[in-house]
Image (cartoon, rainbow, N blue to C red):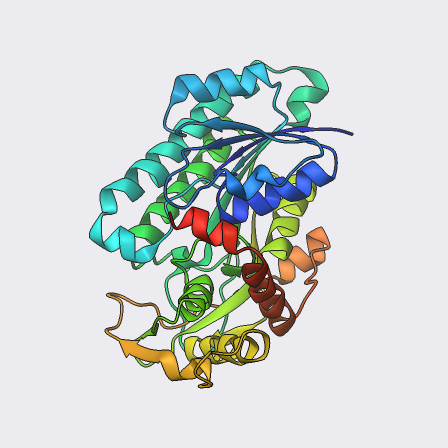
Length: 339
């Protein structure tokens, strides 16, 4: 059955992947995006069948959100919209408080008002899904993984703002019986990621003969999830998840930053050798470590596998090659988002 989705942040990296998937399934998608530096119309321009409706606006604009919910007869709200770059949160935390906390509050209240006016199957089928991060749990040592019951211990302004938004979603379920679901995922990678995050930064810098900066000693560990797998998981949680629950999504692909950058360089040496004949790894340089840099993230996604039927479609090496091939084939996109 065709559904009407309101996807906030749907012109960003992860949100646009979700939009591509749902449009391909024949659903009607309304994208609400502020089109800040990390959100780009180019991310959804390639969708021709069931083309989404793009509305440029802010999730803190209550009147706008109210109107979109009613006008488009929304069945599902999926809240991807967020400020997400840790370095930016350290230098300018105010924007993270505004978007991630106040914006989520506005979306919840607008959705609650809309939901209370629904009837019958329309009301029983309505869902509000909030997309969050593993960073709300803090950092891990050498062993163990985060799961849905792990205590929240955010260590950066970014993760603290996301933790606060998660708590709001939980409170709206327990206080107002809002039909909400929360997902927490580990580091995403894939096509259309803005070149501030590790993988696209390394790829685009290498293609432009720039240095490849690695924080500290490069030993920090992340679990990597291919963006298409994550978005499939989000939709499974939305359509099959239990109300009020949270679901963790990981990639079972833990790598140190050094291992990730070395893998990128090896693939680039094969697909796009340097003109001077040197390996791409010759451009690696270690830079001053990030303030409060969490050592390790890893997600236990056994609950999602068991309850939702979530699966991983690619290995990290397969997904990384697909990602790099996409950047090599889409130089116009890279030029546009960097302009």
